[in-house]
Length: 392
Image 1 (cartoon, helix red, strand yellow):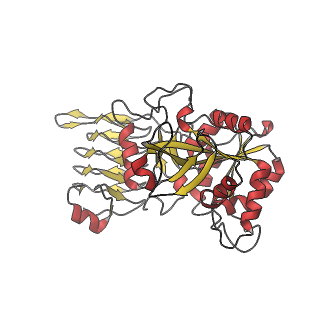
Image 2 (cartoon, one colour):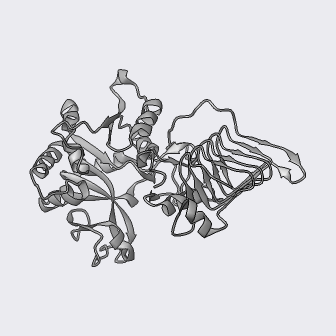
Image 3 (cartoon, one colour):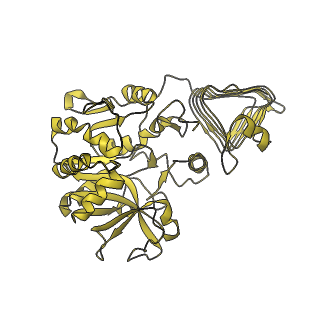
């Protein structure tokens, strides 16, 4: 919040032209996994619209990306957890009956070749394989932590935010943190979901209930994300994964994008991030009259943006953004159709769609005044929600 006040989290814009869900869908599409359903429940209109407009695959070849909203198929209740979401949609599995099912979260920023994870899963014969990223042992209490046998592959414990985690055998100062990405044998997944559905004490959560259940059966393995090699990647961006679950994490991921040498490389043409594009004109920079100069420095500027005698410094300008004369935007993320008035100054802010910053306004300079009007993160980033009315 407030970025999710009007949309599901996977539909939150990112990097000017993308939505969060574009990253996982691009990973699957680049890996040639092209039969995809997106299970939704809350505030799904924006997400459904984006998928239907952007992710249209060839039905002639049997490919699809289909949003599937909660339908109360098994009674008068909505999804009570991620496992219940799968259980209530087992008809989709029965329609296709694949040998394996990939279940990936839809709100993380990363590149991953899922084929390599699936290959390990098939060769191992495991019922489920869980993708994990190495994290410092000191941060173990912030993640779902995977513990393995001495060989390093079979999962022997899956614990949520443990205070007494043990380091990895090959790296005592690190732990395996679950990425929320799974590959299942289809029948093993169906059996586990059915058993879980009958347990009235379960929270019906994949990470909290289904994976520990399969760990107990001895048929769960870990996939080390560090082993994943994406075409076109470098040693610098290899293994990049961000859970932008907080406003500060979302902001910092953007600030990486506009650095001179970002860790996450948007320009990898061998593994592109796909999205939809409105028919917009190129970005425009106008006026060169004394101190009335349209400029953008260390910034990403999207199509349809107009910098009219203003300055964008270390910022993300999404489609349709306009900076009027003598305005200045620093270290900020501006989403679609934001307008910055004449002489206005914005610093360290995230501004959602359709917000108009009036002439002469100052955002990000007076923390107490900003907090009285807007959300302000722990690190001091001002966040203005979609369509909010801003007074000078």
